[in-house]
Each structure stands twice: as structure tokens, then as C-alpha cells.
Image (cartoon, rainbow, N blue to C red; front, side, top):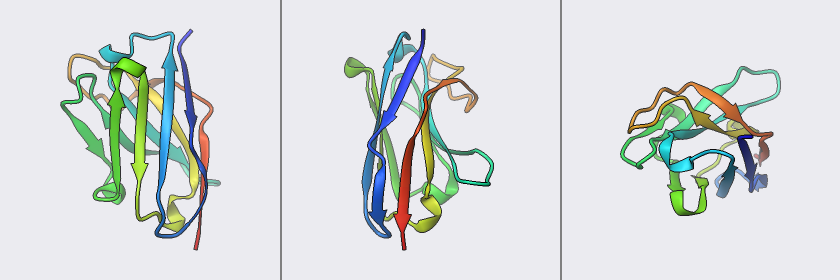
Length: 123
């Protein structure tokens, strides 16, 4: 079974930083793009960032550009999201997910995701 476990969330003050991690198992991690999406209470799911299998392509939603950095370590089957200059509107549950595509592509369509980790930014 494909399992994706996100961790590293917590409570942080506005302007602060957090680094999320995601451990993947049950999948050939280095053959697929992976990404992050988030969902705040009462709001729709929102794409955050994604990275292709070979780390050649990256996507960031406009609101995250310049503040968030996605990276992956294929040797450790781990995905990361460095979040800086956090704002109260970044408060949400963050999920890591497996993209449909490999071979350097990004579909931004996810077929597996984990339970998420809560990020709370206090103003």
C-alpha cells in the first residue's frame, strides 16, 4: 500500500518558519512527481507546491512563491516543504501527495495522500 505521512507542523508566529517533511512508502518514490496541498477550515483544498521525479520541474502557487521551497531526497523517500515568512492565512492542514505523473512531468493531480499535518500561524 502507498503511504504518505506528513509531519513537522505546529504553532508558529506570523513571520516565522516551519519545515514540513513527508515520508513515503509502498511506492517507487523516485519515479513520480510529488507535492503538497492544504485545506483550511471551511475552505476548499488548495494546491501549494509540487516537484517532478527527477527534481527538474517545480510548481508553486502564486501565494507561496518566494516564501516556500519544495525539495525531495529520493534516497530517503522523503519530501520537504520549507515555509518562511508565514502568514495567518497559511493556517491549514498540509497534505503530501503522489502525483499521477512521472518522467519529469507534473500533472498536479494526486492519487494518494496521507493524513496531513496541522500548521497554525498566529498573528
